[in-house]
Length: 296
Ligand code: G1P
Image (cartoon, rainbow, N blue to C red; front, side, top):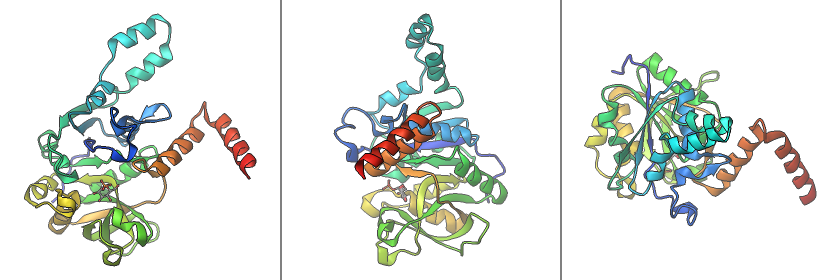
């Protein structure tokens, strides 16, 4: 059971179509939409690095080549900026791919999230790894993911991030049955998992969020399952098998997550990150306060 090796690889499935943000995502992948001055996928990569990960595999699709360019060096652009003395901008460009190796593999046929993760099998090999869904942005400096990695280190069991939602919203998510939440500990034992249940069938109000830390055994279960909800190979279905075989922890959290696949949350993430921004924050806060006064 489990593994003694520290998690150092993350897999980011980024092959989805992004239909909710059309027409913005007609020619630009949704993962490249900027939150202030960074594309969403860069924020996720920086979170991984902050949690101690230095090897990232992005599951991409044929229409998303621009993501590969983003994490590549841009020598000509760097040289031009350097010639103009724009050192800060040069540093910002270099920093993008500096702290982690970013690799790509293409999903080819889109057959669901579980299928996308299974594409990482060769790259990950026989070690524990993280999965990070790029629609979920965490504004927490890698705290949640680090906590999950520590939990896998301590127990050898896979860990899934869980957040409480109203029952009326549970059908948008994977949902976990679990042992009682104990004061002072974020960890619960996961006793069942079901993908997008109807409210009346939901085993709890804890929904699966897009951060996972798995033992490599998840790949055997992904290879063994049949298509589930929506005719897709569901990661949640493979996780339920993994849970039965090895046990699984849930890491319950409440703060810092934005679903930037939703327009409302995309706006919230932009505003909160702008308020925290060292240069933009103070003036933007004054602007928001003034705007709120005018609209009262
Ligand atoms: C996916 C997962 C689901 C999870 C959700 C988190 O669903 O299948 O279990 O709760 O991400 O954002 P999707 O949003 O891709 O439909």
